[in-house]
Amino acid sequence: MKPQVSIIIPCRNEAKTITYLLQALYGQSFPLEAMQVVIADGFSEDSTREQISLFAQNHSELQIKVVDNPKKIIPSGLNRAIEASEGEFIVRLDAHSIPSADYVQRSVSALKENVAENVGGVWDIRPQNNSATARAIAAAAGHPLAVGGAKYRYSQHPEYVETVPFGAWKRSTLLNLCGFDETLLTNEDYELNTRLSAQGGRIYLDPQIRSVYFSRPDFKSLAQQYWRYGFWKAQMLKRYPGSLKLRQALPPIMVAGFAFLLLLSSMFAPLRPVFLAAVGFYLFILLAIGTQIAIKKKDIMMIPLVALAIAMMHVAWGSGFLLGSIKTP
Image (cartoon, rainbow, N blue to C red):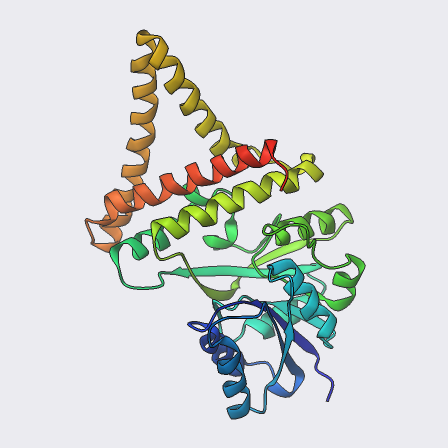
């Protein structure tokens, strides 16, 4: 039976989470016989493929296909999965996500009703482990000050937006867009949605479409993630300068502003109080957010750790953006 829906998943070295995703797909309210899972694996070096094969053997009702992703990057993985898929509707997920039981059903229903050309939902952000650092990063990753206009991290109201996580489309929509841009190592979803919007397409965020997303477990990986986001955002904006939003410009403006003030204050002593006041005000805001979250979670360690996580997200994203603005990979 030809599947009605294809779930496409880019994957590389996801042995820790791939089984959770497959179990969530197996438990979908959407009929299993009408669903196909296509995993584009970038030659995983852990036991990812073995776990996929074992799951497929024990759950033959769910069609699972694995294809190679030689480039080992997300956009190429998505395109290889699209090429191997057969469904009229295509739903994207990541190997470290866990969709709610009605995720596919709600996504397909919205597409059938022509609510939008791309439909997505909200992340329930959770820590990868129970360490204080991981919990603080998860809390920070869901706060508007940390993530700006990424409404899919915190919104509670359905609305038309600029982008959504993962996404669901009619096959014809993706084919008309010629798939994802493989010259971008990240930010490929925003770039595709920019092209979709330019053609008059609509992107719809439905908070009832939910999935669990695991945030980074430590500050090093968080900084690397957000530096990469900022760098590749700058690359995308070189192609679509009109898509720049003020909130996206704020982190690089802040980083450049603090660096400029620090330089000037080192040469002109009267400017040092200005620099210290600016930094102090920024830290006050971050600690206030950390205190708010600490009270909610009844955990005093959230105060400094959440503040540090948000600061790291801002500085890493802003620094990556500034470098990406003057450098081409």
